[in-house]
Length: 210
Image (cartoon, rainbow, N blue to C red; front, side, top):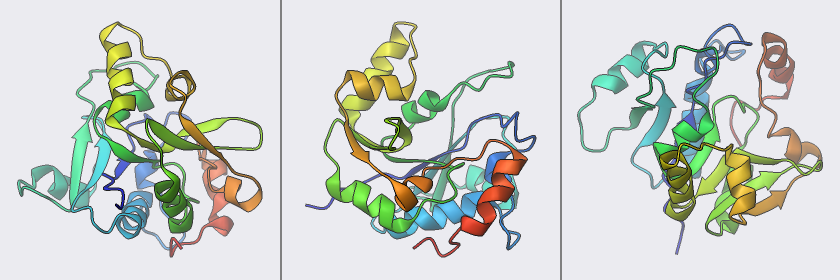
């Protein structure tokens, strides 16, 4: 049976080092980054009626996202989840807050080099409680991963006890499956934190998402 994945884009970070919201970064063709990720997930999860985006209440919205906020249909094409947290510090509430808002296939908005092929591999080899990628240096990427309700339950358990360890720590603790990547495949996990990072990946991007 095919995995019934619920796709979620994590975009709730404060982007302090970038200096502007990462989800609204403009691609070389002038469109924002987040529609590129939406289209990517629609192709990887064609059975999913809704693409979820995790943002904060203070996140900057464009016209499309403002319409998504007011959409009241049972299965909207795009649904915004906010972290419901008041956070006035320079530190983001963190990726784990986004994970607490949804289940299944998770993609960080600041990984612009991801391809449909890589995410389809993730779906094909998925094993609970969580499956993610690991680079040649041994670091896992918990924000390009598939999280089961069991794994998310561990996140909720830690939060209820006042602890919120990084998603990587939880993956190691619960024995999540880690798929090793190297070479060109590993480059797809590259994230962007500064304007220089963003400009550096432009020449490597495949706008088609294949």
